[in-house]
Image 1 (cartoon, one colour):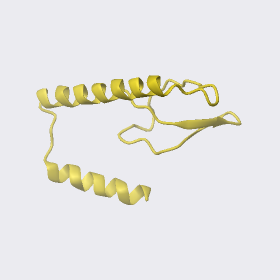
Image 2 (cartoon, helix red, strand yellow; image 1 turned 90 degrees about the vertical axis):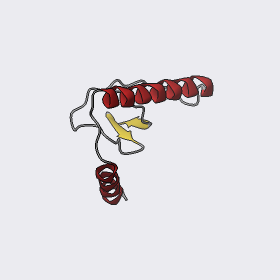
Image 3 (cartoon, rainbow, N blue to C red; image 1 turned 180 degrees about the horizontal axis):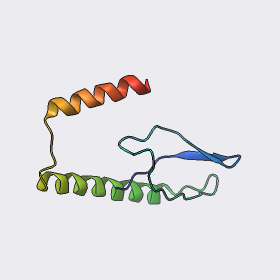
Image 4 (cartoon, rainbow, N blue to C red; image 1 turned 45 degrees about the vertical axis):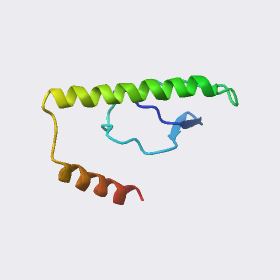
Length: 86
């Protein structure tokens, strides 16, 4: 899985801008430090596209492996998550 979340490094710690979804408590990460004010919008869009393609492929792989669940379960889970993070 590839997931990009914006954050800030300060005083030896990384603070994420948003709560990651579908990530376990102990997940392997790669941290990339960006020069302040030098985020290339074209490269950022390319990264988002790659992440989107990887997510779609993961969905197809899960579907082909029979790892699906009823929509009602998904809706219930999303409602539960939105209550916890609001």
